[in-house]
Image (cartoon, rainbow, N blue to C red):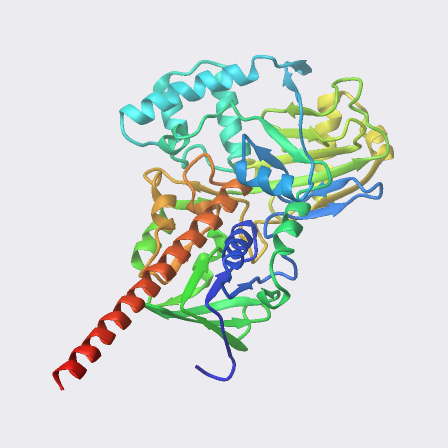
Length: 451
């Protein structure tokens, strides 16, 4: 080991939710851990900032989906409030915003029909499965919009069989009243200061069974400046950047898994207004669906008095907005809201205060929003999660089966799972060493008796 290398029992690559959960689990068991995070902050694709009135603005993850036991447990032990909402749904049809009480049912029926095709006739794209099922409107359009918007996926590329493993249209949600960043802080607070390494960009991993040497730099594209060494490595990097790290030797099975998964595109623009122009049209909070618009989905902030609107585009709609920057995105979003709500653009311009966004697709440390399985890749996440030679362990939302893939809950669960695999490996090796020592002791005693 060179003088520039720092040795730890376990290295964790990536300080997002998965990496932090893995490190937290290992530290609780007394393992010497170092978390290597490329950004200048922890949290990965969880990024909470504050509006002038202190309302949390989520530039990344926002919703807690379903029961989410890992997320809920951390929230409870850290006194973080999670609040559910009876969210209203409004649908733009024939030029008017109308209630959509049957939205979830229509979506569920269309998705269920596609599932039957996917399960019974081999895997195919979700769009192809919908077509084969002969789904009627509005269910077909709703299902396509859901997949492209909320799965951030191309409906003609995403695996219908993978979607069949989840349940579209039956997804209760909650939000952190003080922001998702509180969960990140709770995880980081459990790590000793010496375990935290920010602005540490992993360039390469040279490994063999029971040994890993990691070379790092302080920024992307720069030559390595120093290194870390360990016996075990938890790889908790986003799917979009795994190809940026050189593994020596390569792991062909993982390369095959990566070819069967894709990183989805999404654009999230958070608009703050001085006055909530939408209050007369819908109670807060509410979701608004604008089919075929530049931003097909919008929703209001979690508070009843929120002045925030999130404009969202996923999949092909997100790619159409690529490169516009915040001013260009804001112009498109205000145009959509003006037409959908029948409010003059000049009126919106007067009440508009600010807009914030983060370009996750161009971010060198994510290169996309979250993962989805391609046709034929419905088990690729599970395969990607498999450890290699009791040395390389894999975590992250991309290693989860649907519907946990693409969620913070899935990332947390994957980090705990990888940490437990590490602990079992360490226990197995220590047991083997003890057995070897016992055998050696018996042999020595045997030789002494002969003498």
